[in-house]
Image (tube, rainbow over all chains, first blue to last red; front, side, top):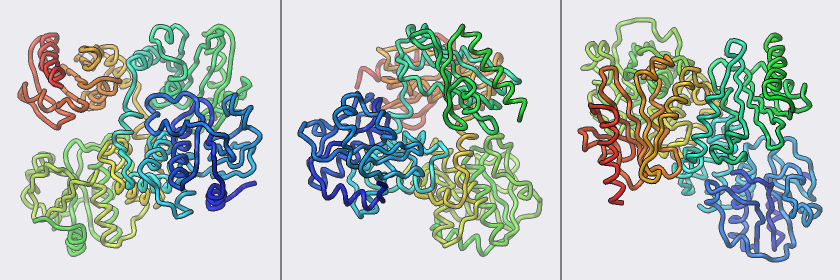
Length: 317
Length: 317
């Protein structure tokens, strides 16, 4: 049952012994919304705990040990979880069928909880939480604000992406007013790369080839590149954005060799090319400007197969 | 004479036939503050014109032809000019001694005008203009807001740098509310690189070496790299930020070979290393975390000389 921001807050106010869950492979918004809610509920005098997968170092500053003191929860809340399948295996099995309140911002949300606070116009689950606390007239502490800032800034690419609304910037403004050290957080989260990643990125860029008068750019990532640099595949999501950044590129493709020798393809496009349509040809899908699919075969054949579909899309402009 | 935001607006209200100038090699804030003020004054019924150096394509969207219709001005206003020496040669000679009002945000501003609206807490001249229009109770049009957004977003690295205050984010929020297409502007300004620049960046990164257990990273840019890629030196300012982005680096150095065979050194540091102190050893200077100097000699000798000074700074931590 969908609830408003105020109703969601009231539901939380009337419960105690609360367990907060988020999705596996936690990103900045998962960490930020989990700990933003943790601090807000603690400040209301609630008994609260969290269960979360390993958090990468750069995103770990809102994490606090006191969130992991175990107790048997009366109330289970999820944040930033669009589908209960995205919970960790353990938490899905133990709590998947007894989520009291889910707080989310994904348009593709598949309801699984007793109550759902869903605002898909919000840039981040942290923006939904900001609105919930604001609607309830709660003051936001510096700790809570710092966590919420993490989620909003990471889900918007530090306010670059088109999901950054006037309201998103307003929320960020209020949070920074509460004492968030936004300059330092941005330095850690957006301006710091590992040496291995820098080497990996250089290798990736050296594989870049352009086609169709520069309208299509392709990067091929091999298992050998991962081995040589020691970068983990989980840390290379950012590469998918690189080919499309080149001036004049309408379709940016990243072909990533997986451990089993098949390929994961990421397609990012600019208007009027649809990434989803290109990927659907190969049984994949996604959004209009960002989509993906899986392919098998020899690497050059995989690239040629994609280029054929991209070429047709470019001809139909 | 220093004036407040309201007084500056009153001064403008009581004048007409206004010429707006900005600094040479215009960046986003120069373009944004010039055209932000242009649109605001036009909407007040003023006769206004602008003189500006060549504007790079990515920053040209606020520029309008009607700003270049010539007339003999009664009032000269500068925006984002910290020192009259930064005006173009032509405008310095013709108007340098008759500037009525200067609107600026640089802490190192050297006053040169009859009236000065200076707010060095503002992230950008565009933020000063936003505050001036707001203080005067003026509504901000979409055209004006788009220009002001350009200046604020570029001077803050799209809200990444520590000069991004709560008020900066608030101003951006109000501007986006006025209809600025911030997602598209950010794509053009921050997410687009020329193919030549991408090649240049890959060459630059392949020259990266680290020293002192990874606490110092050095990139050497040669004239050959500029020739091979066709990138102009003016387009490579961003490279200076790259070495410091690597995890664990306290001193990031870029050594750039100039056309005359000497070297321009850019030093970016993290606390507690002072970039200014390193550069002062070689007769240069700057800010605590960003400074520069000029050096001559064989490239390896130049690098060794700097490394010696960096090594001493690292030992004294």
